[in-house]
Image (cartoon, rainbow, N blue to C red; front, side):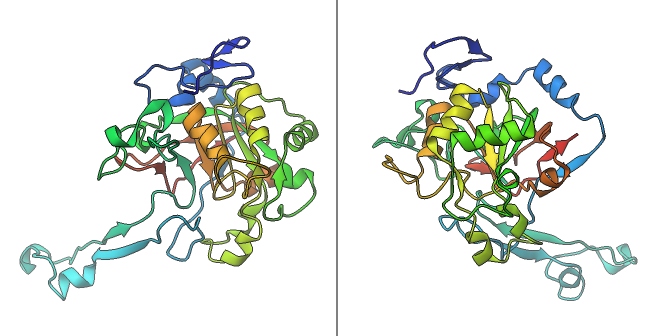
Length: 325
């Protein structure tokens, strides 16, 4: 089983050169986000000196681009003013009780739990013939017809942490990296040096490829987004971020964070997801809108995110994280 056995000094549960791993106890469902403390949250909030707010969420609709492994979505009007009033599709109070004709809108939603701006939960990815996920929870024991019963998105705590933008696209002086571009460890180091930023254990690290600039109003230009969407860090670069630098969470402006297909031999089509979610207990932020941060050259900020409290969901989805500076 993956484990961060001592190899160098511990930092809030992590081990230098090893990362986080299954170190928080056999019943843990939170993973590396356990590293947050009252002090770390206060220090992150102290970064918001200017009162600037950057909205990192994307707008989602039926036409929005998504990773092809996830289902389409629909918002279905369930109640409307006209339906209630004229069509009488719901028993309403007698007319005398509603002379102002006050009615309402409500909708039924059919959505994937992995669309738009996301934070992958630790049950999102399984590995091995027993279909286990983080901390050894197995499908045969903890799967369910209302989603996974361990490590679903409701176990992701409110995140308040120091955020770091690694703006690889800006460093390389391109609007966006082409599809399948591998972001290497050296790319990350060079970009951080160009920005004048040093990583710290417990950071939320967001890597910008430039893909988000093509989302527009609702991500309807699938062909243009697909020209860039699969660029991202490889396994070696991600090991450096998490294992060597102590990143508590990583993410990017693409649908899957990691480069696809993986370069060289790999045990799966998504080895970085397995390493982060299953082996390390590190959540992945996907489709974060990073264009505003890039324009402002806001490389260090306070990152705040909360997820939908819907039992059984594999990720927080259609989110609106904030960067404060």
